[in-house]
Length: 467
Image (cartoon, rainbow, N blue to C red; front, side, top):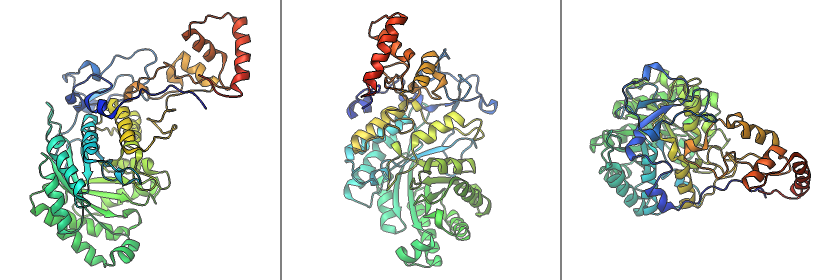
């Protein structure tokens, strides 16, 4: 078994009260673009605190080519409008869709702990649960709405607290009773729109489905909720003309966000991106709402589909920590966010989020420990091997300049590895890596000694990997 740099063990309790970088909660409000500065959003008089903008040094590995990210501010929250067209809201559904992972049940206290950590991370919307599903879920959502949904930092940031409901009055009323205590409450209601769902699950006609959607969005607004999200479940397999029709009706009824879910992970990136573009072009009243993307990972394409949706007009992206969720999971927050951090300026036309990435690793650890869902070692961004290197060629490059084989610095996600270059010694390692490890242990060998030790090491490494 390979010995890699072992992540620091962090207890869930410690995660709630501490962070990997010493910055105040309000500093999550300071956002960054990590590629070439976009002058449209440059604010030269913006105060910058030291933890949020470190000086570039040799070996600094900010994604892409620019070592000096441009700070900007999170736009003021208006349910159906974003003042900056490049800003992308992050809707975290770890506590709702993520908890639907088999075996990932959470207590109310654990949900509250995770919600607090999500607020530190800077998510725009916390999908706190499905209040009508159980008494415990109702209590958890209400608790989160009261505590996390009322903590406003000095810059005005406070997460929206969302509760899910089916398209019926009982669910919607229960959701409202749970979330109404938040400063920014949201009701999210949904109904299936694909032919297979309407025929075999709902057993309803298109006309009946449209009427249910329209009337229930209207009912949610009548309760006093000014922020209502609607989802046509299984939109990825729905008829487009029907989608345009039902979405137009719920907009007229008062929906502020339209979420487009690829519920069964059926679409591919070009297809899902085109779906978002077509909805944006053909739905009456679409300019008065926010389009959201919610993608599942059944074909391993959830992150790619989500980003394709963003590139074609989605300005809310629904994700989970570690990509947990039903079946094969959901789009991963850390993958989506770090992709936009890395490539947002050049590839995605300047798109950016309000996430403070230095809280990503700790949030990942917390969710893994609370749910019991272990992160696979080669998981992008947060896996144990994400910043580990065994190949001799790679190790040589890393020892010379970490930017040769790392596009993200682990410190950027709040992870401090024990070995600066994350060297994992094995049969593929070279002399440079072995020499470096020996020096760290206090051994200085001349070239002859190193050659002897190297070949003896190789003999052992072919049998097992060593640290």
